[in-house]
Amino acid sequence: MAPIAISPQTSPRLVPAPVKDTSILQHSDWRADLQRDGYAIVKGAIPRARAQEYQQKAYEWLTSFGNDLDFNDPSTWVKENLPVQSKINTFHTYGVAHEKFMWDARMEPGVLDAFALLWGTDELLASFDSLNITLPNRKDVPRKPAWEHIDQSPLRRGLHCVQGVINLSPSGPEDGGLVVYPVSHNLNDVFFDNQTNPKTWERLDRYLFSREQLSWYAERGITPHKVCADVGDLILWDSRTLHYGAEPTELSNQIRTVIYAAFTPAKWASEEQLRLKKEAFERYGGTTHWPHDNIVTRETRTFLEDGSRDPRDREQPLELPQMSDALLKLAGAKRY
Image 1 (cartoon, rainbow, N blue to C red):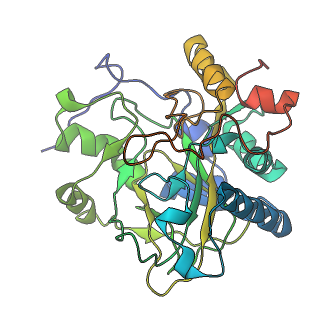
Image 2 (image 1 turned 120 degrees about the vertical axis):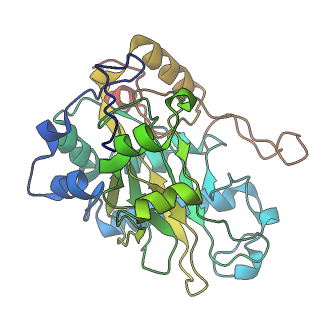
């Protein structure tokens, strides 16, 4: 049976891409990798020495909560010595998305230039994304299984968002890091149109895949690939590409340190999304991977497992960034 053809023209629920893939991605550099494979590596987007400085700042932030954490002593890598994390080794409360070192890394010329080259404009919006510091082989928490997903609703068709990871540590085959399913983005529409019920599609830009659904991709030769990258590299991937963050193996002693960062053209944001983005910024809140749409402010307060507020919580970042015109425009708090 031929695949069912569903398009924004035939289904009013679907949202077409704001730009055609081929109009921006037919190139011979890393953008060709992104178009073909659904992911790419921009080598040396941040000079190695500066990337290491950002990692040190991230370490200082993590140890600023008055705990006994010692990066040289794995016996201290326990929950009691860490601020509250999400289930995927990330930190997104305590105002961390707006720490000075986070904004400084996002605004590195090599990072901004990559997204400006990708979208054909330097008038960009930034996501207010998380910090990931993964301490390998912790004894106090179980290993987390893979959770293959995409960060784009089945209702969106075509290229809408490209996500990014700023590598502040090496990511080798055994280290924690991004795992992608190369070329899976090209089957996004075919999969949803023929393997799922359109009535179940939601506007939430997140879809988790079952083992059975992953078998459908495997039958078509699409299998997982661990992305290896160096300090200062920028890893990019299409939000339609299946992916997940892998735990380090037992052979790794590398502390994974990355900043999630994405940028899209400011002109793509509606007035309502800009209002929500400005509100999130003023509250020092984190958002999703999406810079211009799907603006959902993550919980700005930090709570412990018993439901009480963490006494270490903060009303603002430990070190505020310099509120320059460039930063305010990237944040959506000031217009281009």
